Amino acid sequence: MKELSNRLERDLCEGLYRVPTIILEAVASYDLWIWHAFFGCPGTLNDINVIDRSPVFQELYEGRAPKCEYVVNGRKYNIRYYLSDGIYPRWAPFVKSVPLPQNAKDRLFAERQEAVRKDVERAFGVLQSRFAIVRDPCI
Image 1 (tube, helix red, strand yellow):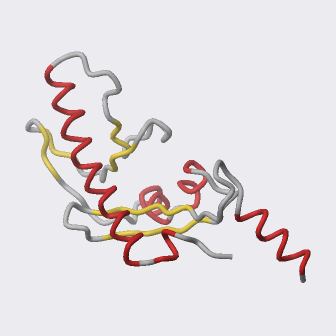
Image 2 (image 1 turned 180 degrees about the vertical axis):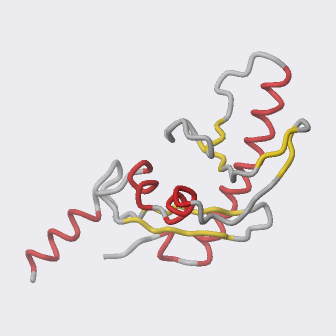
Image 3 (image 1 turned 120 degrees about the horizontal axis):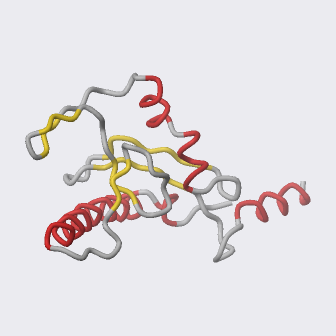
């Protein structure tokens, strides 16, 4: 039993800080509504591996995702999109910021996207304050 406990602790404490971790993928809106949460096992999963196992992207792939329609610059779209950072692949649903905006249009886009990403960070903060397991995973 002691060997199993040591192995479990070693597996859960992988990473930079050597503390127990979990991976959480969440879809949240500005009003702090959590539309989706997916918890991944530590050590074996990184951001890309979580996407491979995510029910959200499986639904998109299989065409079972809820309908979503919106208009941007007079053009109608019907695919959901997710704000992401540079680690995610170049897939249509991922909208990344402009890393070094050079003109007013790119600067405005980067500024607005960063403001919305702060809403997501705020949602993670609420999850951490409400559910201790998210903030401090235990063994």
